[in-house]
Length: 417
Length: 80
Image (cartoon, rainbow over all chains, first blue to last red; front, side):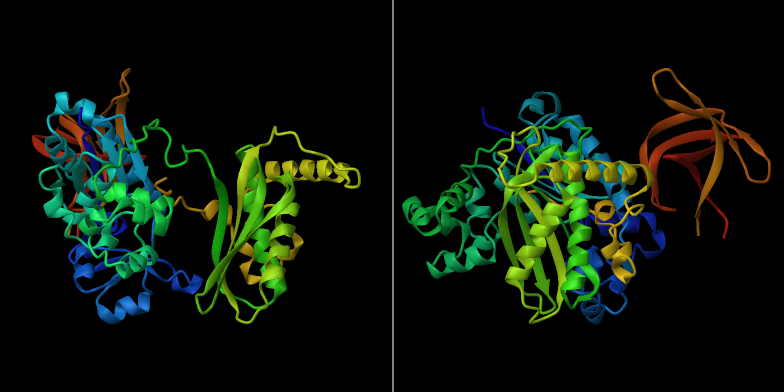
């Protein structure tokens, strides 16, 4: 039986929730933006009016104000957005138990089995659209198709508050003429490469020979070819509705931060690395894992960035070992040719912390055991008295010392694969 | 312009988990009995900006919308 997949995307999510709660700004161009003083001053979302004025997500607030002088910028209120995201999800769950969230504002629904109760895919999409608008006062765009990729394409095709049905009869007319960059997972680099080979549209990608794509792009070439031909058969993963966002197998844990001021020397960098690692290592221990690899991410003030990673000698969840590895990585790979704007620490290759560890003759395992006990105590104190109750001495006496990456960290959309 | 007016509410908690408001206590001490709840469903107040369970109530022969926006209750106030 042919599947019926819906992809629903909340229109201008953050901006429209703000408009709902602030009737006085509803008819003005509105954007949700970060705090420029903390150097988080970019546009996170904008409403239709601001969009028409040319405001783009991701640009700096001053750029946006230049294009749109009357722009109202609201600070983000994540608690409120999380609440709305949950409420929207609850509505989806009325029509299917198979709902896969993709970030806070997007989700796939497999409604194949509910079609007999609620009617066709289009009928269900109309019901969802109506429920969301009546009960939550925001709008969604929904794409209906037989696979996840085309459903997502449909929800992007018409906005806002629209439903697009993509069938086997019309997909060549609707999707194939579109730019190849509009396909999920064709980013700027892949797009450039495809254009080099004369592939400008999704249709041309679909008609390119599979062997050629695999030769040029490797595994992803085959995936993209299947996407373009509507052959994607990846299932909508169904989750318990009480979980939100973290129900997949973890592949890595990381925190990153754009610091309130540029980092000028190793002392600054150490401070930030320790601060980030405290959060990363604590989260690692909470999930009951060791990591085998530590990675850092550095972006300088010219916005050039790089990532470096390194294997650890032994699986570890010790804050100190991870931080020292991160600092060593940094020292090996950066010379302060330019000041640093943002940094990240990430651990990957996670294994359960019940994994036996190969000991060695010359290392001192006792120190590591003691270190682990110390970390455990610190975690415990922080759980009881807050993440800033106990801090490393290196982080004291600096304007950046009050940052709390663990508490402030936000869930981002997870990759498709 | 209508304002979001948070109010005190006396409510009954049913065995099945439903919450039925019985009285609204106004800030000046007046007590309004809710004669009947005509409708309850999730809803938004576009007038004052809010979202919650919307109870359409009959109070003194008038229809009033009372919202339960967890954990607070509000009505669409007239002042200003």
